[in-house]
Amino acid sequence: MDIKSVWQDSLGDSLSAINKFTESPEQIEKCVKFSEMLVSTIREGGNLFSCGNGGSHCDAMHFAEEFTGRYRKNRRPIGALALGNPSHVTCVSNDYGFEHIFSRELGGLGRKGDLLIGLSTSGNSQNVINAFTLAKEMEIKTVALLGRNGGKLKELADLAIVIPAETSDRIQEMHIKIIHIAIEAVERKIFPENY
Image (cartoon, rainbow, N blue to C red; front, side, top):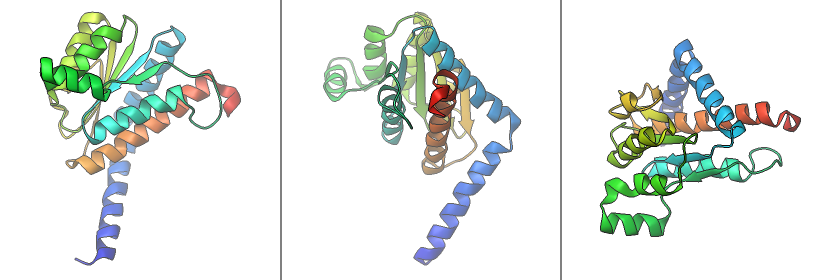
């Protein structure tokens, strides 16, 4: 296969994933619910937490910094944190095991009324599962951005958005789109003057 075909096929595959997702009224309603959960958490003084592994960790960080920094225009910062700073990860991994890196941090920082967003292309990341299990005990609401069949997290989450794709790249491409649009929806509700 030549390089041009790789580009054409991959972009076509990505577009197909977007179309499949957007043609489902159920998926759009779940995205609306996600935005509503973000808005209500922020308005009620809760903080947002996010977590994931690898590329999903990068998306979790991206999610948080769009709230604490800025998205399109200046506005007050919103309390958001991607769980998993390096010193914490190495400390907890060494003392308790990698599967506890997110739950230990959430246990120290999270409060009833907060919202946890977990990203996992398989839905079976044990450290995210542990964080969601603890979140339920702490009365922290949960949203899972998943892929494939949703894995174990699909049943644990208060709201699960499952991307109907099989490869991590296509799933993560949809996750970042969902993140960006959710943030825009939040800003349009809370900071309408920015639009």
